[in-house]
Image (spheres, rainbow, N blue to C red):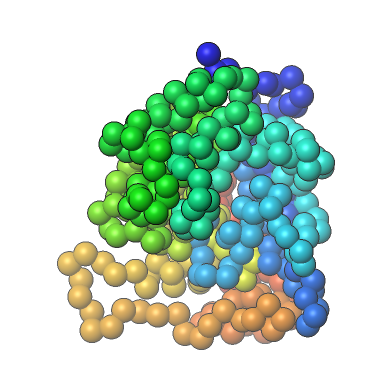
Length: 335
């Protein structure tokens, strides 16, 4: 039978229940126009069975943060500072061979668009088998059995038949379920989901979110969920990290963040959501646009769009302050 326990021999414990800890992570892209930090001094932790939602506008560094943890940053990008621990083991200190053992095994990632993440010329079953055989001691027959079990677990009908299908033969929702089956096939303790519901209609989106919640409870895994949709964040996350221009604006538990946002950017995001039963003439928007990487202001990155900006906001980067336990804000003039 396939081995499903995780080897703990080479891991040091951070705490009794902390699975992921990121400390002062920086990822820099070295362009012809000059270097820019796509991720700038990001820190957070995720406990066992907990979900951290990372939210922000497109280009704010959400995906780059996760690709950095997976060590999938390609040139001209490079992780230039910080540490990232998985069960006490610093992922950024591992060589590529060691990282390949972790990637897809103890930690896995579900990508935004399954049609580009899945190989179009290989069957769904072959691709799941390949991952299982890479990380588990088992035969081809056992890998196939495991693949079919995982396809069934994620709600794909007739899993034995779908095992032999190619990606183009499945609907968008089915392809996303197949990606989830592949990611969970080796019992990861930490799963990253990069906008996994963006390309799906609202009905399928709700089904996928429910599937995530059920599987997380079943496997008791830690989840990092990336999205720009605040409705999704409010439904699935225990804690929320708000990012803007590669930097952390605010971090809090989900209820606190939505009831009492303290950073002007967080408040503006929440205020711009459509509300059930409320039909304004126009939805509220955040004036201006995210600055280009080479045009970031010297001080707070949100200063040019912030109605509360002061002189110090233009000249200095606001430090991250803890307003109350677990609620941190990078702002000189919080709400």
